[in-house]
Length: 624
Image (cartoon, rainbow, N blue to C red; front, side, top):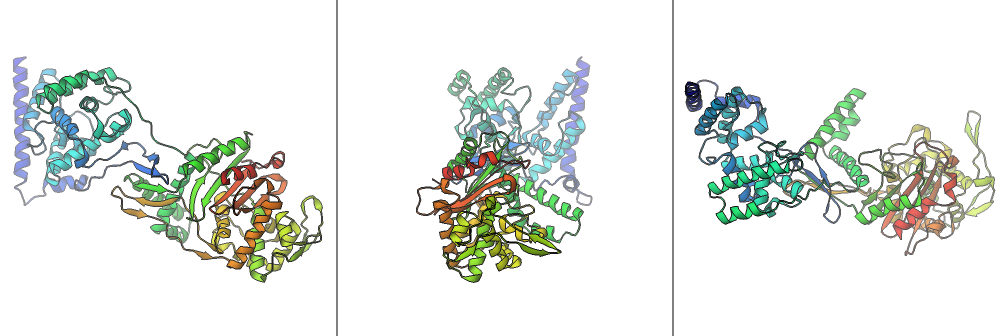
């Protein structure tokens, strides 16, 4: 046994001398490729980037979503890492950290002798720098080959970074089990508080975990973690990082976990924000132009993949996305939809825009919505029914002909020759004919034949030109026919698109799209992205004033009487599609424009809901 230990000792001593000579001599050899050059060919030691949690905030500055995939990490710069945390790891992992050049010859020799006694590789003798290298660039296999690479990388790392930078990286990379990386994320996950508020006992408890994250998992093996915590405290005492009194107090302190789950609130809104963030990056960095220029599906997919990768990269950099979310209105929208539509097979979406600030303050994706599911607020184009009439028919007619709201139009039956021997004969609801009626009467009671007459008089192409500022993304060449005056589009509009368009009625006749993202900032508070929107002229102030009058009468004495609210101004328009597949109401008051859609995912009649008017009740609850 003595001979065996002696033999291993000689091997260990030879190994240490060899490493020392190799590192030191190589630094003097200028004629051959340096170790630095060789290592840099494999990894970039000069630019180390760790993934960091990104955060999404509501309008009040409260976090509504933590964004991370595999690694839950909240990065702390060196000057924000509590001294007691650094002390704990120096005491237990590398007491000569501030003295060595990345490897500790004495520690390596000690480890080799220990391994000789165990007849295997049990102890590594790795410095903090070596452990950092292993976490960043190497595997965790226990072989002398890996150890050799570890030492060389560690030595090079020490040449590129200060000791403070190395310990900062180390504290932020070590694994604390349960997908948690770095002391700050560990502190918030296990104790629900920042690391600056940890006690010595809690620091020692957490410092026990990285040595063997599975064995010392605080959630599954807390007794083992507690045992190692006591060893950590003993090492801190021996290294004079704690006093006897602090040591005894830490041993006596009861460790009480307060596990904090990942913050992930308002899934409807957060899902939309992820979509909007991608759109913002695409617009800001030219991906939209690249997609438009791609000539084949394969080329488009290549650009899309590049955009998706760019977004993933940004979300791993710890960005802060500040939004306009109003938590009260968002929760109210979700609850109101559940309250008004208990039927399990009927869906709905509500969108609330602050048209004074051009911001999306609430948007729902459907009942019982789960994050990243199909989102009915922005992914679900539906025929708008008569809700399109103010935008496509009445406002263009008033703008083109400058007619007063008291002017009349024929509400009797009529047929139009569409060419090729085809006739289009729209009918009012129930087939009724009303003769000459005012514009206000025609709109507030949603008569169909006057709308088609007006649309035909304005001209299909002219009328459609008024929709161009709204950038409806699902318009189709087949839509250019008379039936679209009643909302008979091939695909239609999403609730967000249609509600956004209605904000024009809240202005002087100009349109500026609303967004949910106010700004995207880096960890230092510098603005990386924000929307730069331009106001687009749609129609005149005079036309807009007349349209506001017409829309107000819809609520006062028309199809939306049940949506009446106590407000200085309110106006809007209902919409019902053929066979009652969809119910719409989009309207505004002085601050908000709100749109509500109700229907089934698999289109079928919801006639039984029409008399109850859930779309009107939801709108009223949100706008009162």
